[in-house]
Amino acid sequence: MANEKKLDVVILGLLSHEDLSGYDIKKRMDQILSYFWSASYGSIYPTLSQLVNQRLAEAVKDSSNDRRRTIYHITEDGRKYLSEWLQKPDRKDDLHSETALKVFFGGCTDISDTLQQIQAFEAENKEKLLQLKAAESQLQNVISEAQDHPYYLLTVRLGIATYSAWLSWCHEVKKYLKNQNHQ
Amino acid sequence: MANEKKLDVVILGLLSHEDLSGYDIKKRMDQILSYFWSASYGSIYPTLSQLVNQRLAEAVKDSSNDRRRTIYHITEDGRKYLSEWLQKPDRKDDLHSETALKVFFGGCTDISDTLQQIQAFEAENKEKLLQLKAAESQLQNVISEAQDHPYYLLTVRLGIATYSAWLSWCHEVKKYLKNQNHQ
DNA sequence: CTTACCATGTAAGGCGTTACATGATTCA
DNA sequence: TGAATCATGTAACGCCTTACATGGTAAG
Image (cartoon, rainbow over all chains, first blue to last red; front, side, top):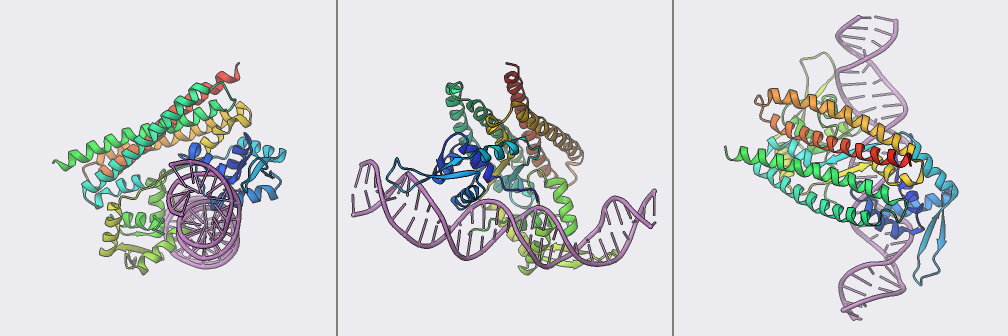
């Protein structure tokens, strides 16, 4: 099958800007990609070894630091591989939503249960929206300083658009459920 | 680990309305859950066996038809299990977006490549939005006929909200990229 | 008669998480 | 000196998809 695994290109993408350790990569992913991509150490380190085996990245010892630390550097082949992936028309965009599932099957439980789920979902979305708006402001201040910043900003805007839409939906669901509850 | 697998409750949810075969379940999921949940036969059939082993569902032979066909019926334990899951506060809502990834790393390739990705993404979203709006109209016509319809409608509204937001984002990205291209 | 759809199921293998294991360094 | 953070890695295990295997029925 065409490779379903995308962690390799995500890592190459991060390495295309700067050399990073496995630990750094995890941090970057948690900070800036987390709302539409995630990975654990248990997949990051093996993928890094694999990238080295395929000559898409090189392991470089970090001499600037006492700590045991391996930083990785993207190779020319790695850049080519990344760029080919960016040109491939295959894309998959999946939403896996347990909240949607719990609303969908809401008829099987009390309205108050579904209402609680929605309120929790709403709170999470508000929190994430705040974070993304903070990131947006920061990026707008430094937009001209690096070539990649406009792309980061566009991605943040996707997050903002998505969470805003979900928040509106939460209002709609709450309104409906509360109305039902009082009848 | 707390069970990550949710296919069992999805199937129980579908069985809570009507008895279904594995084949029916797949069809239902493709038709009405596909934009926020999916599954293949390779996971549906084993999960059905497992539900029977756990006494959450029963296998019933279908006598109304010549064809070999096993339909499944939810048990009281199954309903209890579903309802407990609906009350549990744990929820996970994940967006896995390769389009976002391709925009994020857009600086590593030509603007025209990213533009193409966005145009394809836009076309897919328009298509899905049309489908959901058709589903919305249908549901609004029969809203009072079954207790679950309002919940289905709310879920469809989530899809509409999400795809509309993504379409607006596509416009924004296109505008930015085209502007860059002409400078 | 052949295409499309109905219908079920298994095996191989990929992908990823969690838990575990280990140990250094920094800061209070 | 103890907690937090830096840092890497493996093993077990779970979940899921794809591909394969099989065969019936309806409609044109």
